[in-house]
Length: 219
Image 1 (cartoon, one colour):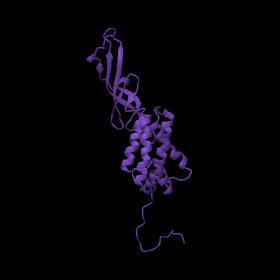
Image 2 (cartoon, one colour):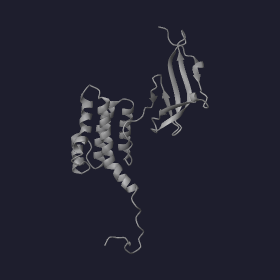
Image 3 (cartoon, rainbow, N blue to C red):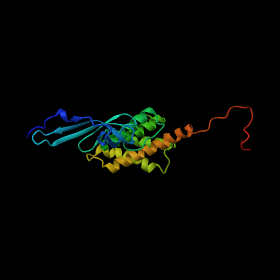
Image 4 (cartoon, one colour):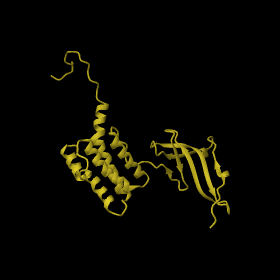
């Protein structure tokens, strides 16, 4: 089998004043649906019959300016992260959650579920639990401290259970299960951290001390 010939003449920079100079995609960095600038386009051509064997586009997001690459199958890398963004997270929790979302975005469903299980430890330890305990102990701790309410307990435990399956079973988790694990994890983080963060962010400013009781104070 003949190897494809690399033809430098097939590297082009499309005219930004034409439709070829732009490509619509979802940016894996900022998550926005954009018409990205095609910085360069590359075609690997078979010398024998001039058939295109590989096609790639280098794209630049107009929103965040980060670069992406689209391959012959129209896959754009980096891929879009899974789950939802959550605000107000401690640094280590935020890093772990971002890793889980990134794993899901590239089809790393096993890694996604393993990191989600580990997030249970991050959250519990950040809230005062001891590091190195079994994962069930972390759920018990969060429940005892009332971060996890009785109605939440079954779906929070699924984060642990799915992570255990990903650890001890050879079969790769299917996308739907990993998606649910990531969804449960995001919801836990929203309830533990984001709601408190938002309440402080939008809390009314403290009244200035005037020495007297505010006029609208309840009697």
